[in-house]
Amino acid sequence: MRVLLVTQMWPSPGAPDLGSFLLGVRDRLEQLGHEVEVAAISRTRRAGKPPSSARCAARQRRSPAINS
Image 1 (cartoon, one colour):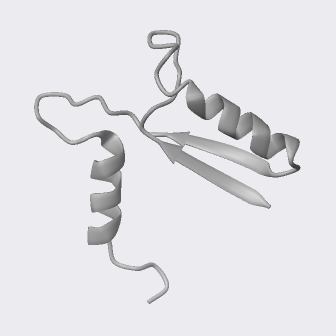
Image 2 (image 1 turned 120 degrees about the horizontal axis):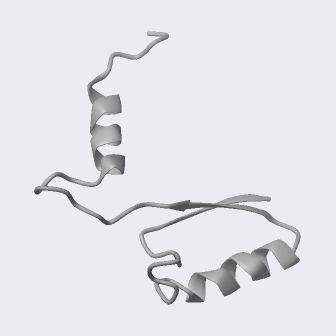
């Protein structure tokens, strides 16, 4: 089974403990034979703007459908 693990908490060089419990979840799913992909969404805000992932989603909602 393919699994997409979406999280705002994922370890990085600057914050190695952030979401470290999720590493075990990912590893166990892989041991059970699942294909796991991680989408770590940045929680960083710049000048009051929402994270880039939120801006991207909003932009997609405003765009007309390609095949409509």
